[in-house]
Length: 182
Image (cartoon, rainbow, N blue to C red):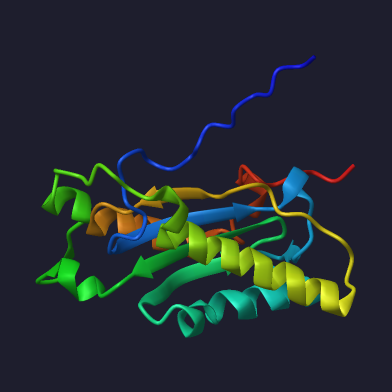
């Protein structure tokens, strides 16, 4: 009988993903299928599902009042976005962003990983897009399990990530998620 393989949790151990901060998130489509549209002349052209994902991402703060969204882009087979949890002003000193990791190195020990806010936000986003997609009976698709995240630690990282997201359509052919059609 085959052994079940335990899937590695991609979240940082001992980090509470309900903590205030900025998080760079990438959410992928299973098998890197193009389902949200295509990049034409360096510009992302969204199809109906892409428009639905775009609108659903913009509505995140409606469903989570203590959340803001920063730069984001819907690409053919993934979504990049910056999610801001709670009042980011708590982490601004002058015009510089200070990561909570830098402010408080003693991290919480007993984190209830099933109630963390960031995974709840991303799970809700994926569920809303899937549910609305199914109502409209568009072509089928599947999300890749989980999502990638990066805790943004300083202002330089924030600016670099914002630029990466902004220019992602321009740089699509060099992107790790680009799949050459056969």
